[in-house]
Image (tube, rainbow over all chains, first blue to last red; front, top):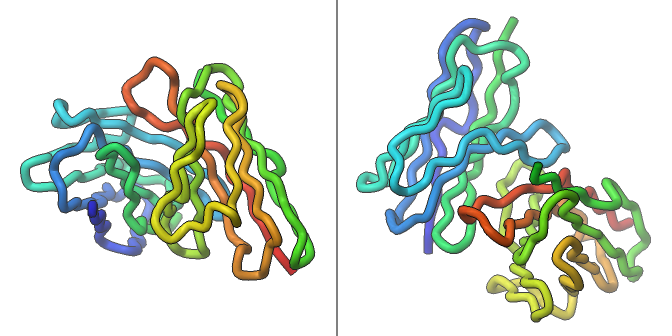
Length: 109
Length: 116
């Protein structure tokens, strides 16, 4: 059974600082890995999807890397803003999506 | 493209009643749809996978007679919570996969169910 772990569980940084969110998974036989953002009481917003054959994806200030062999992915958010405050979820697709518990980010103005 | 809607966005019902939640793919055909539930401050747990025109596949521990899933068309799946009880109160989220795609799931905005 796939286990997905996200560290840290919570993070508080001053505005402008770069964010580093970590995700690890136990079974490397995956199709892809996705990073999502979830605001309180809301659904999921897809941020980045990395196919198993890729090593990274970038969108604006966001960059996600994937190291399948070691079962790790990292989401980098550059120059954080208060609007980046949310919970970030990592999900691994190995015929079904398995989610981590998330990292709750607070960016202080 | 790839917009998924859910209706209603929130519902409050009395214990013992049944509640139906709809999940629609608005601008694409979805051969497969998924239903998740999320408890407060916890992550999403897959409940079941539904394919158009066939019976849903339920995850271990999910009662199929309690959570009825119907995937009647390529754009609509419904989840009915039968004889709801307070412990069924949760955030229910659906997702859909395109008929031709890369396995990516597109998520709806979720439905907050509160059972009194």
